[in-house]
Image 1 (tube, rainbow, N blue to C red):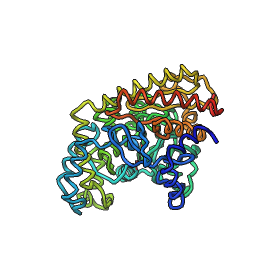
Image 2: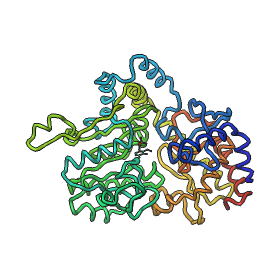
Image 3: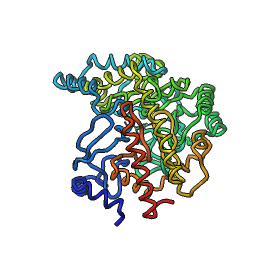
Image 4: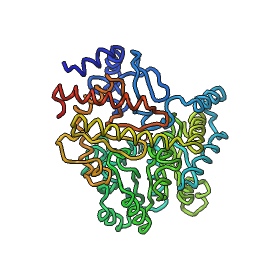
Length: 451
Ligand code: PMP
């Protein structure tokens, strides 16, 4: 057996037992595709700050960061206090409550495009509602998406993300529905203009920092061309800021880049580490949800329900988190840590003469595992000079071995591989991460996994 896998198995007997049980109860033993890991993922018992501990007591530097939700780290005292105080006051009043007003106030204060807000229970629900509102507003049928960009798992979004780039449906999605989705390559301004010229596209949606939190970076020039082309054709521009919102800056990517979309979808940091999402944007578009719109002849409002929309626990956590984001340098700290981490990882890769490339923007990092040993540099990637398919074709076996090797060294990478960083990662985390990566690469080389 591989010594990397053996070391991991030796440290994690409790996770192995739970994984075996989980395999009998849950498809692939997981509840999110990104948690799938060979031989098995770690089962986490508790977390605090930038660290977490598995059921066997092993400590990890955490780069899952609650899938990007935990800009403030695990268990920030102000967030915990807000949730604990709310819990005995009720988890579901079943009608309006003051926290949803304060929460919406913070969103409209921080996010430039947000004139009005509708809360949902997840980011997937937010993008689903954004598309529906855009269709209702424009009367047009189609949605424009960029290949490789992730917007949740609803039917309109569940293909051409990491496979099916030709627009064919993934299993369970109707082909009739995919015909209503126009796909454009990221960075293709001519293709974008041509697709919008027919004026049958209700909305264009994009991750403004590039596919999968910048795994495939997008240039501000392309965003500017997109803003211009959508405005010129009456197409609604949706920035999907589920990850980038309250992360690139307190006002998200749109405030950092200086381009304001018509609508924005939010989740993750929005709800302070609890479940929650929102669609926000121009008042006239969000007014599609207004009961008053029924007064117009032949009109019916866009229906929207959802048992846990703006639930008070998520609202309490969200208010605490957004207050900190708005009033402190939390975004800046996470961004600075990521910049130092990328530089230090680059040094490790150079030292061990690895063909891998580290890159990223804002508070995140990605590792390009470069299976074909292409002469690609960090500057090439960050200047958006590469085809999206290069980064989307992550070699699974190498990626899993890397992540298992890092786990055995006390560091948990997110599945891209890479991760979002937080405002509470420390110099010690940085050193541990780089030492773990150096040792893992050398062990993988010994086992013939990488050059
Ligand atoms: N959009 C983006 C950009 C995301 O990163 C995600 C989740 N990773 C979603 C939408 C879906 O959000 P959720 O998982 O809350 O449904």
